[in-house]
Image 1 (spheres, rainbow, N blue to C red):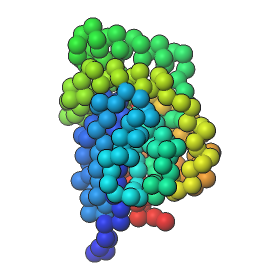
Image 2 (cartoon, rainbow, N blue to C red):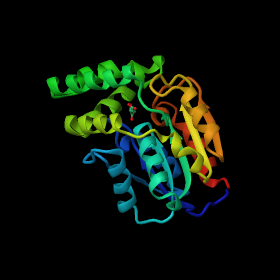
Image 3 (cartoon, rainbow, N blue to C red):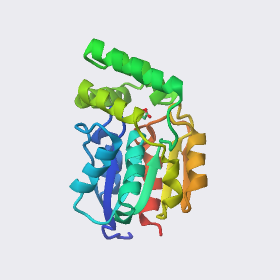
Length: 239
Ligand code: MLT
């Protein structure tokens, strides 16, 4: 058996309404080769302060950095603020571009819904078909993990994060300055941040590799953990 020494610290950044449970399968599979740490950004109200909190809380320097969706926006902002601290970057199910007017309207509507109900049942019902592959919308164990994350994040943080994303900058300006090995990964059927958005990132980052996970939506770490673990292991152990 090949033994790997702990190669690096791995900083994991979850997306909207998601927390450490998003990364549990990766933590279980990769702890032998790295020291994983999951950011908790529930108190932050802008992408810039989310990035500076991660940079302040992570003692390790430098570190490997992976972010999914809103976590990808935070990871790109970290690349703007302190690229020298990041050895490797993984952007999962995210995008560099701004929202369309329809997406902004949907955010306002979802905020209204969450505040009116003081809970996430209607928000999750509305979002689930956009979050997971159509074959998984009735996958009870998976849906339960998603619901429980939403409850832990809570309405206040949800609203703060939606507002933070509406005010986020266009990260296309950051991409050409990213010099570290970069894994860009997405579910083939990601309906929120589709494959084209990832192809666009790959075109603008010098050392980027695209991995597409088949029969998978916006949450590959939970929908297809094995495939994601293989891709992250290659990325961590690769040059
Ligand atoms: C996320 O999953 O973090 C968000 O859906 C991303 C977004 O709404 O732009």
